[in-house]
Length: 362
Ligand SMILES: [Mg+2]
Image (cartoon, rainbow, N blue to C red; front, side, top):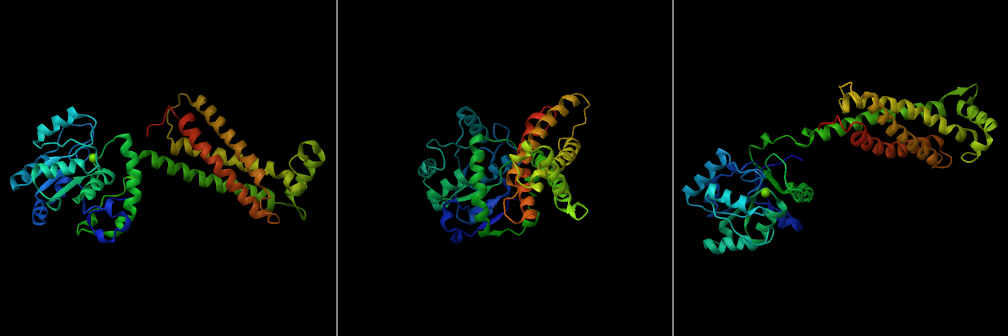
């Protein structure tokens, strides 16, 4: 989901009103001080991490310092409201940028907001909160009757707890973006960061390889089971009958008719070739293994993962073969989808975290 810049029509936010920002902006210096002043704002409340400085860092950008200096010169009051767990770092940042901090219950509690209003003697309607998190900065502001400006999070890692908030934030904003009146420069929206992440690209490649392998697998199974004929009979029936004649004890426990007797063999052939295809493509494209060292060990691991996946696939496909009585072709495709789906989860986890673990550098 791209970050969108503009004004939110809060009257249309409905039940999500408390989460809805007043405006959104990409970076602090994009927030116009003229606009704030004309809107009657006199108190600016600032979040710290990923709003004025990156998480864990203590160096302000020249742009942030210039914006803060301009705000002070214009006559704004400023306060820092932070949920940081490192009070000493916060004290250093506060001294460096010359803005007092407020103590109190963490956002989204209204406590720190109310303290700042009380201390400055400025009313809630004349205050604005600027922060990068909907679940803390903006929610807390709305609970206090203060307008919130939601900033795009700065690049870089963040606190583990924040990542959970981000998931909820994304869901909420996917709804609230419908109330957005985009600003005129919205054509400059940054592209989605999601696809920039190596792990997402890697997973996308794995899925593409998997889709191709699935196509190969299903085609081979269909060919062997339903398309190939010997004389006027289906080859699967002829070969299945052969299996029943030769290995009655083995076949009897899973099949009562020739085509079902042959099914595991067809499934094995399809899965085997598809697995080989996946191995080659994932090695060179998905996990980009170039080093020749450990190749043997790696191959062994891949085979272990793949053959376990293959066994899972064959067993599950065979169990579901005949899932819809009287519709053998559809049943076969369905059984293949279920088998391949379960095996795909197994294979990705196994290849990523076991087989190619040493070499993977996302
Ligand atoms: Mg923050």
